[in-house]
Image: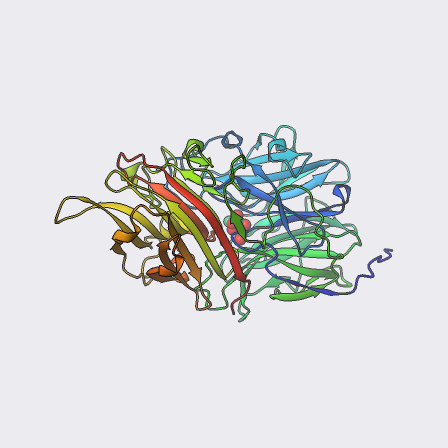
Length: 557
Ligand code: 6LW
């Protein structure tokens, strides 16, 4: 029998534990790494890809590394496809004998549906460079959501989804040695996200089903042999928000782990949307719930709420590395000698020459050279050939203020630079300075432009785009762009001269509805800056400075 060492009093914590675009969580506890919890989440097309977060107390999460930080870790880049849902999907993170194993599927439709299963490893979870190049696994049925499980006899099993299979594999080569067709859930659609756990003589197979929308749920089965037959739990699902009016919806895609005292925990993905499920700009985020086992040996998981309690480890923020805090904000001044901030993300592997911190002549700024592509996918511009002059961070709070300054003196027609709320290349809301040719005089004029793009969500109400001529008195000045999200879930966009921020001009307002779901059903919004020639020949650099992102409140209900 087991002596429960836990005498931790219940303490409260707040969901989501990993706010912002952080779906498909997979988490472990690693005693050998100073009693630290590690989690990973899906990145899709954001790059660097597949973040690892670390925590000592399950409350304070700090970014530790990216498993994929070099374009050459992806076997093919599929740069020409315009599908926004490609990229790195659900991964599984595991630790064994001094090594971290991250198995993921890189999904592409380049030649039709073609997910590639990749295994990356490291012995230092705080160091991007230490992550190995991938081993590509056999994937005859084009499966996704790989899991890794080591049995006591040393055999390794990879379970995968779209119909659940368990493959016995050789992890050094990625070869499949044997395949078992096993339990596919309760009969609901999209059995996926499998994980296997060994406990008290049973192999437990946990999966998600119902699809990643409001019908999502977590179900479980077990068997005394790895190959099955697996017996479904009669009281499935073990966790869901379907048919409830909970604020946290779409709950599913779970992973389980035990802490130092033997307590069990469950992570899942969820959207802070309420049952109406219309407004959830941050997409699917990572939530936590305490978990116990009933007398029959089946899990009991508390339904997800914003404030929960459980036997948390003592508060501890002592974590190594130069990572950022998942709940934190930014104050970035791009000082000479520094790198691109760790929380900044590109859309696909970047053309690195487009970005430079503190370039000569423009200290304390981030230089962004224009790409021919703007933020909207349009094959006319061969959008991905020469990269995208776009860089961002995740929106992690449902009320915030994001402010950034811009020095930009465009020379050619259609050169444009500014700030954006970005879900995909089909759904974003931009505020910029753009060089336009006047219809009446034929002269080039600098204008402020507000432009919502909602191609990816037909039928959504979109405010009109508008331009305002840059006032004479502001010409040549550094401009300040501010994006504020208020409690009514409306983004407001303003511009002002950086030296007179009170003289701000309102450029537009837009509902978060525009960047919820649609072409980015799996995604969450990014807040960023960009520079583009809009398909032209312009080469004028944009210099961004004084980047401030202040999350103001985590919750809006
Ligand atoms: C992921 C699947 C899912 O592969 O959504 O909600 C897919 N679960 O397991 C993309 O994140």
